Image (cartoon, rainbow, N blue to C red):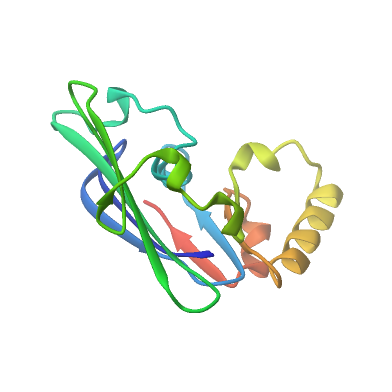
Length: 164
């Protein structure tokens, strides 16, 4: 399964509803520091239960935050996973509109990789080039979503999402 789109609602730096569509291949999320690039990855991880549910995830002044991720299986079927947390710490998870728990999420079917800027910031320019080349080769098999402020990454991207 690959990510079709992500819908953030009052999640961290995203006030209101924000929908982000993803293509196959290598997607680079870019922008200045502090614009919310990593919050997109955090949103995916929150929806999938890989990010601790805390009230700090709620945009300041709002009563709840939610994230919905829609995945497309190899056969074309869509699966929708939604997670919500409110200011009292109450949380909920829905898969295709039905109440669910984390054990119902089909992790073994995921065909994507998420990389935050910490995964490549320590490389010098030569190692970074090799890293990007390897990512590009891997993106022929898996969907790769990478957060970066490195402009050299943009030349290899199949999709560029700019956050400002």
